[in-house]
Length: 261
Image 1 (cartoon, one colour):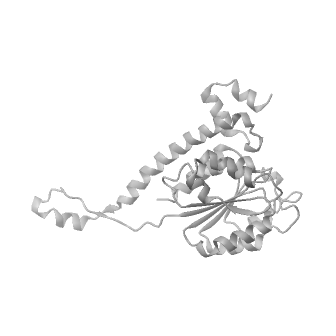
Image 2 (cartoon, rainbow, N blue to C red):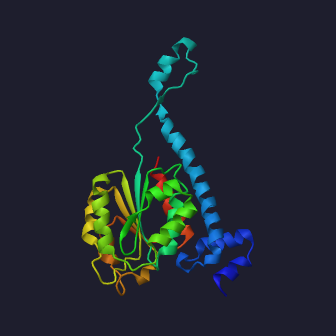
Image 3 (cartoon, helix red, strand yellow):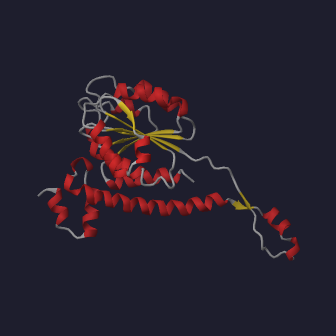
C-alpha cells in the first residue's frame, strides 16, 4: 500500500501523525499540500511558544534598587516597576540545502519551516545547490513561501551534486559575514559523487561560526558507504543529525528558536 493511500484513509489527526513520521524522501506528491499545511500549523505553534519566551527575555530582570528609589514617594508601594534590560544579540542562520534528486523533498520542507518562523527568527540567509550554489534569500523575502520553494526547486533542483564547488562558493560569499552569532545549518546526504567533498572550505566556515549543524536525511547506517563523505564533512561540524521527517525538522527548528532569546 502506498503512503498516499495509507494517509488518505486515515482521520485528519491520525493522518497528520503519520505524515510527521514518514521519511520525507519517500513522501508522495499527492501528500505535499497536506504536509505544507501541517508545517504551517507546527510553525505557528513554535512561533507562539518562542514569542512568549522572547517577551520575557526582552523585558529583562527586576532592578530592585531603581524600583525602590522611583517609588519612594508612594511610601514603598511599588507602582512603577523598573526592569534591568540587557542587550540581546539575535542569532543569524545560514541555511545551505542540497537540492539534488535524493534530497530535494527534505530541503523543500526545511525551507518551508525556516521561512514560516521568521517572526521569531528573522535573520535567515538561504542557499541551495546541486551542480552549483545559488542564494535564494531575496526570493523567499519577496514571494509566498510555497511559491519560493517551488521556484527554487524548479531552477536549481534535481541535478548532480558538487559539494566541493558548493562549499568553495559558500565560503567566498559568506565568510566575511559569519561571526559568533551565526549558525550554519547544512542539509545534505554528503554524497560527493567521488569528487572533492569541500571539507577544507567547510572547516574555514566552522572556524568563524558559532556552530555548524549538519542534517543528513539518510539513516546513520548508510553514512560513509559508497561515495558518502559524512566522516570528513562531519568532522568539520559541531553536530551531525539524521533528519528524515517533519518530526525531526520541527525539533531542529525549535532548538534554533531557543537560541533566538
